[in-house]
Image (tube, rainbow, N blue to C red; front, top):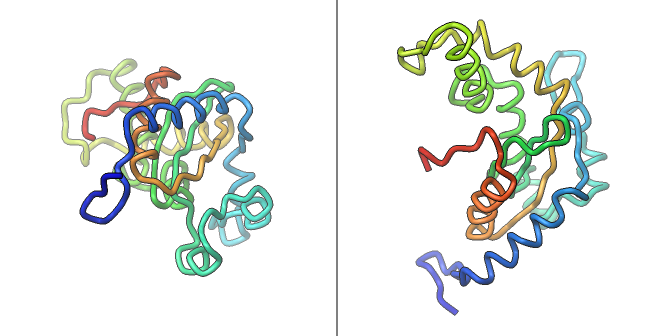
Length: 186
């Protein structure tokens, strides 16, 4: 078995493809959650993860010590609109990343909502030619995020192996033909 410099195993393409196919075959039966099921809004207006849900469904894939230290999930997440997969993402910190997608206040944090807003702006107003940082984010993105919170669902696939995580993201995006994925910057 080959190892990289971090002493992680380097799997074969066949192994990765088999794992990706298993995940693909499970997409339709995986649990889907609304944002408000995964995160609960407190009186302060802040959103916190629903610990009961995460503990019950077994998303804590790390040891108890690691969960306590990191309080996060590494893996793949899928966004669905009208039960149709529209985006596949990966993160070493899915919980933080989900909050950024749905609540982020900048084009860096809420990159998907920004992309959707830009697409809508380009089609309805004119093709935006300015710098990404100069786009009127506050005027367009909050409405997109509200729509995502109200209507989108999320599946989470904990994945500890980095090779699997990256391969499966690309594989699912291609096989599911997700509308909002692009690998232009990867």
